Image (cartoon, rainbow, N blue to C red; front, side, top):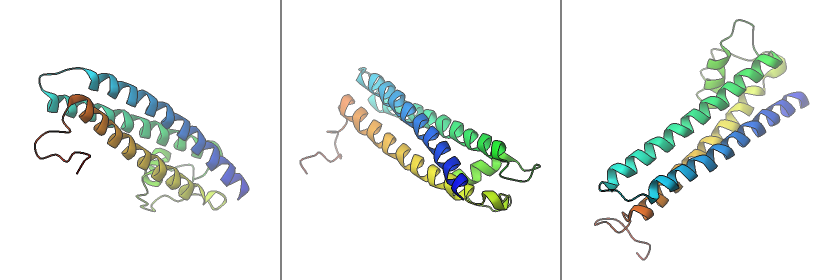
Length: 151
């Protein structure tokens, strides 16, 4: 069990590092794009949000691939198992249960799910912050029908 926790913690730490790097890049790009003046601020906002979400999706996919590679290294499942699919199912907490780890690695699924939940929450926070900052920079926070901070 200790080996499972060590491997799970190591893979989680690698993925957290990747997510931290992607966060810095995504926020920097969003700030740079948000500072530009544009004739169509709402369309610009949509572009910034779509780009940010796409970058985060790429990061999550890379993190899932790292989990799949770790499953392969430790031989966490039967040899004929689709490790990428298994990693996606665990990371997203979908949990079909059609592929299961070998008995010696049964904690790997829950450890992957814990990492996925944490990083999806982190991504939601990034999206919210990019939205907030871009709205501020584009001057859309005082648009009719929006709530200002004084209300």
